[in-house]
Amino acid sequence: MTQTDILLPRPSLVERIGIPRPLLWGFVGLLLFMVGDGVEAGYLAPYLENHGVSSRDVAFLFTIYGVAVSISSWLSGPLSDLWGPKRVMWIGLAIWAVFEVVFLMAGIMTGNYMVMLAAYTLRGLGYPLFAYGFLVWIAAATPPRQLGSAAGWFWFAFSGGLPTLGSLFASATIPMVGEVPTFWLSLVLVVAGGCVALLMTHEPRGASRLAPPDVSVRGIFFGSISILWREPKTFMAMIIRTINTSSEYAFLVIMPAFFTKVVGFTLSQWLVLLSIVFLSNILFNLMSGMLADRLGHRTVVSVAGCLGAAISVPAFYYVPLAYHGNFLVAALVGIFYGATIAAFVPLSGLVPQICPKEKAAALSALGLGAGASTWVGPAIVTWFQSWHGIEGIIWIFSGLYVFAGVLTLSLSIPEHARKYMQQARARGENLHEGAAAFH
Picture 1 (cartoon, rainbow, N blue to C red):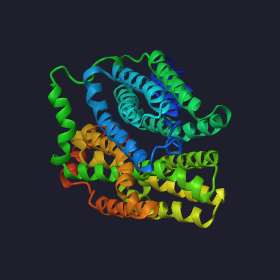
Picture 2: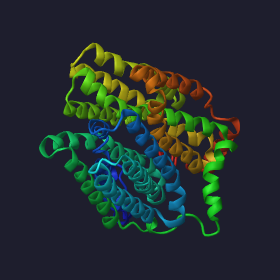
Picture 3: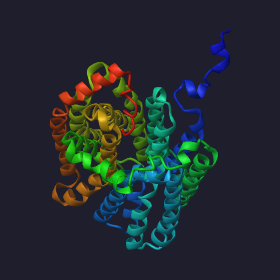
C-alpha cells in the first residue's frame, strides 16, 4: 500500500457510478419531487374534459402554465447566483405546495376554471426553481471530472419522475383511491421529495450566493439573455430545443382522449403507454450521447432527432389508429417516438463548443428553450385544433421537426471558437465542464 492509497480513500459505490456523494440525498429528493409533479401529467387533461372543461380551455390552461414554467426555468439560474441554489429550491417547493392546495381546493373541487387557471399558472413557477436550482447546485459543487455523469443522473431523476414513474404511480392509485385523491397524493410526494433533498443535503456551496460579490444584479440577469443576439447560433439552438419537446407537451393535451376514445384504450393503459414512451426516452438519452461521440453531435441531432421525429410523430398517430386497440403495436411506435426525442440530447454538448467562452450563458439559452417547449406545444393545440383536428396538429409538428433539421445544419462551430478551444487545450483547461447541463 502506498502513501497515496492511505491519503486517498477508495471511492464509494455512489461516487463510482457518477453521483457526487455530498449531493446524494438531493438526487433522491429530486426523483420523489418529480414523481409527484408527474402524477397528473397523463390524466389531468381528460379529467378536466370529463368535468365540463372544453378541450380548448384545457389547452389554454397548459399553455399559460408552460409560459410560467419557461420564465421560471430561466430565472432559476440568475436567482441561484444571487441567493444560492438551496434558497431557490425552498422557494420553488413552497410555491408548488401552496398553489397546488389552492388549485385543488378552490379550483378542482369547486369546478371554478378561472381559479384553476390562476393557481395552476402560479404553481408552474415552482418545479423549475426546485429542479433547475438543484442543477445549478450540482454544477457549483461537483468536480469537473464528475460533472458530466452528475448531470446525466440529474436528467435520469428528472425524466424518471416526470412523467415516467409519475404516470405509473397514477395508473396504480387511480383504480384504488380515485382521481382526486391521487392529486392529493402527488402533493405528498412533492413535499416529501423536497424535504428529503433540502433537509438531508448539507453540502455548503448551495447555501450561499454563487456569483462574485462585484457582479451586479443587472449583470447576472442581462448576460444570460444577451447572448441570444450576440451569438445568433445560440438563438437557433434555443429554437431547436423548443421544438424538441414541444410535441410531448402537446401530446399530454390531445393524446389521452385520442387513445381512450378513438383507439380504445383504458385510462390505465394510456398511462402505462405514456410511461413506456418516456422510459424509452430516458434510455436513449444515454445512447444518443454515446452515438454523438462517434458520429458527431450535429449528425445525431439532425438525422436521428429532427428527421426521426418528423417520421415518429405521424407514426404515433396513424399506426395505433390502423391497429385499433393493439397495445403492443402502440407501445413499439411509442418507443420509437421517445427515442427520436432523446436524440436531441447532443445539443447540450454542441452549444458549449459554439460559445466556449460563455458556456453557462449558452446553456441558459437551452434552458430557456426547454421551458418554452412546455407552452409552445399546448399553444399550437389551442391555435390549430379547430383547423384540422388532431391530424392537422400532428403534421404541424412533423413540419416543425423538418424546420429544426434545417436549423441544425447551420450549427457549425465557428473558427474563432475552434481557435479558442485549441488554445485552451494547450493551457490544459477543461472544456467539457457543464456540457451536459441542459438537456
